[in-house]
Length: 110
Length: 112
Image: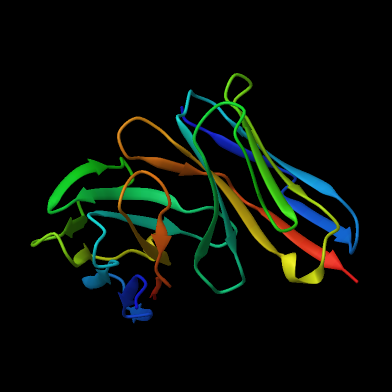
């Protein structure tokens, strides 16, 4: 069964701190996506990771992919309140099916 | 613009009624996806079109669900004989390749 698991599910962190969200997937995937969702809104694409060792950074967010470990991470540096949202990873499998994790709800506290 | 648009944004219906949702993708995107999202969960893949061809269907898509993309542009998702368990946000996304998918605002369905 294809599974994408994220942890933690809920994360409360202080402004200025660093933290990492983990995304594990159960079956070989050829690409990994990260999305952000604000309450009541749709999903916004953050990163697409296409190969083992891929690392992408945008502002205070950095995503990486280890295909051998079937693990992707989303690292948050010096968190600010505007980063409060739910973050989803999704794995692309054979064909064009995509499986999302359950999401990590991030709250950044001043 | 144009991003992905969906209509309606909200739909309230009674159990047993049929509903139809529309998705207009970004114009140059040939790939179109439908997802369902329930509260506190990630989106669940329902189906995928490349141009007008429906190439992937999830086992979640029961025979009460049907999707079309007749001219390879907009798509419709119909749910027949709605059940309370169908209450969810229905999301449409489009892309040019297997890279970034651009999501629409979603249609929130409530089945009473």
